[in-house]
Length: 131
Image 1 (cartoon, rainbow, N blue to C red):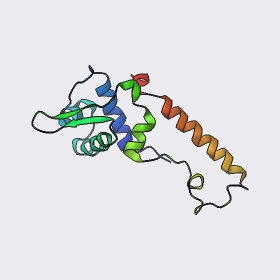
Image 2: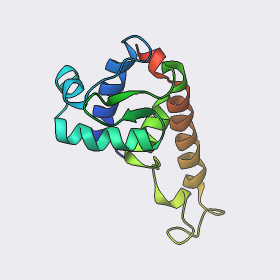
Image 3: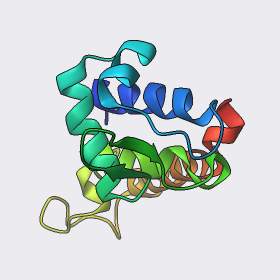
Image 4: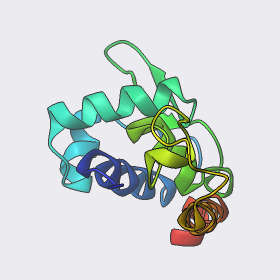
């Protein structure tokens, strides 16, 4: 399990956006400079966030991105899910093909508790909390 650089950049850009007045439209190139994220990489990240409805996008010469939800409605888990996919500490929790010992394995319960703790923390931490 590792949070990628893309996810870190997503959080950085989203926090910058969240600190501005609601509804502010950001051009990708400006947001790239202001949040210190490489422009081409940010473009891919922003598309993932828009697909997950964390951002909205407007096309055209005067287009750009804005938050699709209020900062208190955007949690870290949703950002990670949009950018990196589901966060899993081990395959054995999610795949019986990987591990068929879940009923007999004493470690499985510990992995599950750790996964639940991480997920709960990420879901309960919003952009507003981080501002």
